[in-house]
Image 1 (cartoon, rainbow, N blue to C red):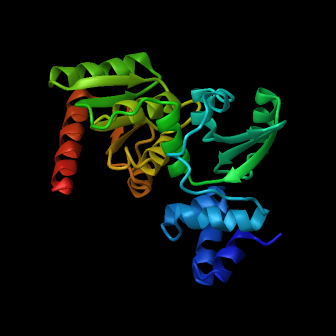
Image 2 (cartoon, rainbow, N blue to C red; image 1 turned 60 degrees about the vertical axis):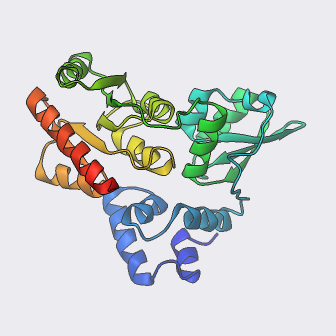
Length: 273
């Protein structure tokens, strides 16, 4: 089996020098090469899917989100399972179930789907963007317009309450979620103006939530502020480089929360102009 990096170099998508830098970063950060290359901004999701399908000899699929799917097929997966694993059912025939997935390395997820559905699961590679779009269309009721609200994602009730009270006092409507998966569902369904999320959460952490928010066409422009107890300059730089709009250290201070929220919303408004 060819290495992913070699496939991308042979296809002239990246250079050997870029591959060397990505491999060095992969070694230090202990991430998969595809994720590192995406974070570096040198490949697109579509290019990564094409390369992975070549590497693993998997089929891939595009432009499937807006197709019609029978309810019996959708019932093979719960909305939570579809969101958590980023998987979507495409077709069922006899004892086989074809599903769109993003990660061919996740064998545990494929085994889980097999046990859950009682069928032989056939993986088909697709982008996060289109799987999320399919889930939002067929499993969630997505709003067509932004709500005038701020989504706060925090598992600590005292911390969430401090942030909520500070924002409500300033006239903001506040939505709450306790983990990344619940937050993603709320974000797609309600489309808040801004999201404040803790960095470390069960089921989906803040980085995973931001990646999913940016991947979905309906939420890609939503600014996201990181909330974390790791407040070093290095941590702040990492958060901003990853794509967070701002950074709020813990323990939270109400005045700081309000200030960062107003600044981020003002910047988002200027950017839209």
